[in-house]
Length: 96
Image (cartoon, one colour):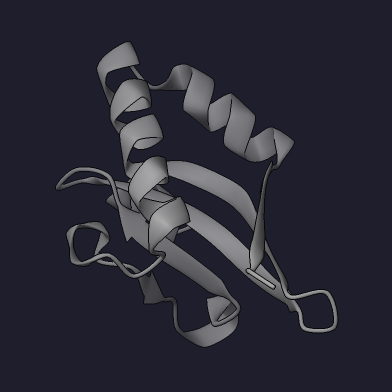
């Protein structure tokens, strides 16, 4: 049985996404396709955050823009739930 992937977005993510210009929004959607196929595709530069945020992950949209998410694995059902919690400039999303 293949692994099912669920994508969720928080209100915080939705607000931050709405503030991005349309070019960056479209680029995120393209990167999300790569992400769904392979969370660790080299072009995404996916990594786990450290310290108090060690339960969060990030992937690269542009040199400065990052998408932050939390990954939950429901092993019994073979389901991955990805909840996107923020998106934006490197200094903003990593320093909040």
